[in-house]
Image (tube, rainbow, N blue to C red):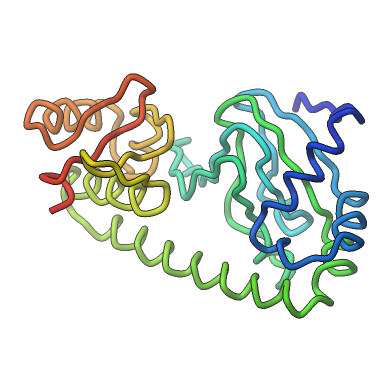
Length: 233
């Protein structure tokens, strides 16, 4: 794993970034300073593993740049994407709360910077704060709703239903409203969508081409996907 520490000149930028994370908005300046001092920020090259499954109960992570995916790999090596996290997203808080590993591995989808909070520091500086706990409970409820939606995706029998459900889900989580419809604000490869929907990349390519031809979606210049009103009806 190719990992290197972040230069001290970036610490102030890192501090200001931490203040924008919802669960930390309630912290005082003194608490934020303490938090900055216990956070370890690292950079990971594309395709590097950030956290192996056995390490997931040891850290909470915050994506400060880039994009990462949470995956499960089957015995035959097929990758199933559980979630994609972009700048400002965090993950791992549940494992820190119950001390159990998450059945997934976290991998950088592009060159990324990630801030890690060790379990012992999480317990010492965050679990004692009632406001932080309220924020965590709210976030866990959001995670639960997202899990229900992904279970719905996997319940569909046909590949088209799965791909449609994945696009709808990504639109709800990462969507930006536009006069033309909903823009999924993520650069997604066909294999990423395939990993979400548990279908082949070729199937995704065929379906997306058909959706474009039928004017249900549009692939924008920045590779974001526009879900038109005819798709989300």
